Image (tube, rainbow, N blue to C red; front, side, top):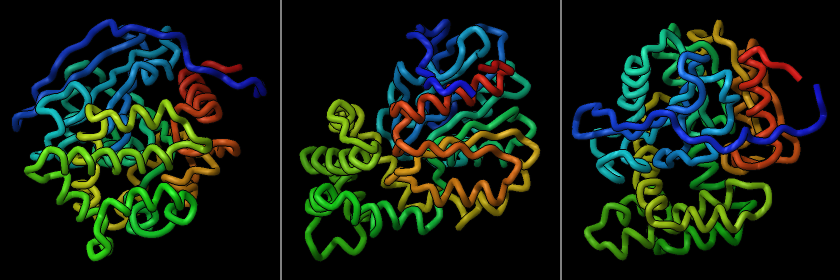
Length: 320
């Protein structure tokens, strides 16, 4: 393999954008980039409650791929904004299917990082005949140990000062269940209370996302247009155990063993530690696991970008 790190492909504008009504009051914003009729792929953003960005369009060779990106329910430009009603894992899985049907693809590559990896696995296990390959980054399997690591004990021991800021918003007598305490505030009738909680929740996630501090990233996480949907939807999904049985995605891995997969995982990922990617690799030995030794969680870190671009190139038959 060429040792020179790959960067994102050049900036690109969508060749199509639109809104898809998926029912229950939800309408999803989507965009399509690349070459119509080329290798199909779908991008599943993180969160839950995150959204897509212009850089997300650039992880595939636009001459070889036809990529659909979309904002999940309540996220980004999808409507209604920050809505947590009729918003769960399996509804989003069905949304992905509706988008595939809209595009007219028989199968497509499911590409997702962090919560997007959870969603990609859930979608592939529900519709294995519709997935040509899986590209996963920063694997999150939604097991209790992973949830506890991020919001009870674990990441708190590494990002100690930031954890004090995050937990410090909540009175001491409510800190036994920080997710519930935050959810109560994120759904408060008082706008100031909601915004303060959204900002702290989002900043905590931003702080654990990168190996080195990234002030631009933290500024974007503090922006209410991003923080509010991210925090509200994320807190709800954590409280509902992501609408999955314990270790469900590992238990059902046999359903996808025939699907080619590449896992790109930062060694120093504080948000979704490598133990989850390793557990998935052991259950699914047919998949490739690429550990990036100088990266954390974020898709924007150089080593992660390199791994993801190499992954999409490889699956399109393009080699160094």
